[in-house]
Length: 174
Length: 366
Image 1 (spheres, chains in turn green, blue):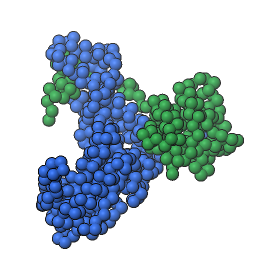
Image 2 (image 1 turned 30 degrees about the vertical axis):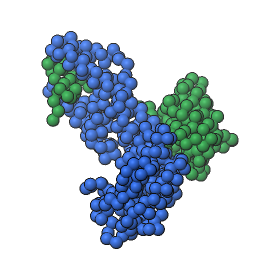
Image 3 (image 1 turned 180 degrees about the horizontal axis):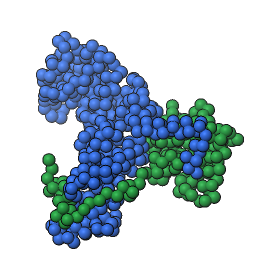
Image 4 (image 1 turned 60 degrees about the horizontal axis):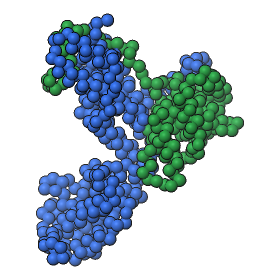
């Protein structure tokens, strides 16, 4: 049992009671992070595909797409990823820590990609994702975002990451 | 474009339902474990472990790889320098994970590794040094624990010294020299006369065992718990004062019912806890997104619980206690055994401070 002297929550309760205050909880002010919002993920995937997918089939390494959207949504990681990619040529052990490995556990992205594949927007081809029969919707979404100048921060990071030539070893896949 | 707008035909509705399930499952720890195992990750994380943590992980790893690997507990009276043995008590293992301050200095690191393993070897060989400098000589000194660690008649034929950082060959010569001297000087009650010694780092450990997804996931999780613990207990840059946050405490001050210094103490503590909660939130978002999602889910559900309960809460204390109780329940439900209870309690305190700091909880008259 804690006393109000060492427990600020209990101390606050006592102070509020002494002041005849009524504590209220406003649930509307609890905003869920966009990091787990499916619509946001679809939008960032659309932008990432527009900037990074290659060729007429609009192909991209699935793990690279996952890392791209992860870093685009977390600007503080962008410089670390760029530094890690630069240091790989020298095999510098100390720079391993800079790789944003957290992306591997991003289940919201996995769920959104599963949805887009099931909806025929994207298609899996081995380690790659490419345009599915309904890809035009995603492309249109990316074009709308660009025209409306939305997600400028995320798109700027996606553009900066174009200097990286990804491969499976770099992404931790072998 | 809303996701729901794309769900206009049955096929896509099915896909949406799959996505819903996937998202719900996304909060399950087992899916978080689906990481890509690699030796590089293993080496990186093992390098970062110190002392007992490193020893625990090495022993855990060897237990998975070697059927008869036996950890040697340190009680009572120490482990005689031997952290484990295997192969019918013929192979012995000594581990050392230097602390960060030692690792960062190459000279200190070399000395520390050589000193630590010499010390372990002397215990196993039952030796002590007498005299100083050139006059120093090795004398027999019984290690009483050895006879309760190895079965009678059993002797070690191989000794493996495992260190968390093994970048320099400079430790090889002094340790091999010491080993040769100890064999000559020892009564060899627990070590074969023809015993061999090798020194391993995490890379050699990985090459001699199976580094799979589970090993990496366990190490990664240990790292997450350690980072969250450090964030909660270490110095965190304080959040810049906001007018809303300060006005809440100014209001209590203005009522003149509570002592001003007590109100100030509360204000400082809640700001500190709020700052730590935000730091933990950022850290999880960057490094363990599924745990971040679980925390966000717990926060949201606990707020809903507390909101429902607030109708029956008779006083501010009751509401705050209810919030604390609901948060603890939801965190246990979503994070479960992934975080120790003490850490979960700290997270609860941080989340309450965050609810006060970010204004969902208020007490000022409208």
